[in-house]
Length: 239
Image (tube, rainbow, N blue to C red; front, side, top):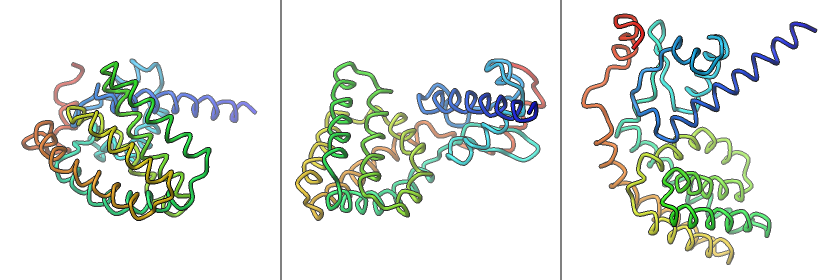
């Protein structure tokens, strides 16, 4: 019984650490390439190192953290090559998702998409960059859900956090234009026009590629050796 309670407590602490670090990364409080020093994070989050390490492994699976064996952890560099690879996959899978959503969406699903659009417009009016990123990422996730294809959902799920992170890091892009493109996609899906929905989704992703890659060049480290970056914690100690 005691062992069970200990496991539950550790799980809740792991979730607390995971949620806190995920939010800080997705809100751009922790920049790509930032070192994550376990003892500092454990003290800050008031958790022991065991649940913290479990949280870091979950974040690694999300693509948000890089763990270097025997060296340490850092926020994933999210290089221009990483951004390019993400767009390569999104161009194919998100157009498929939009096509299937147009064929299969029901009124409840369309209501969720409409709510995302409303949230995005509200965030734009408030100039809330984090809110805009969250609403836009949620819109894309909802389309995948409406596609009602478990295999596609399983393929897209590992990309959700990285896509949200991309939207936050590229918040300089014109949010009104993105919202307008989302509204066009919504109208095609609501009308059941699968070909138009797929074409709009593909064009929407393609349109964001060049500007996102240019912004990635700005946030990327000129030269980053993950093992060397993570190893600095040993040489410098607490900062």
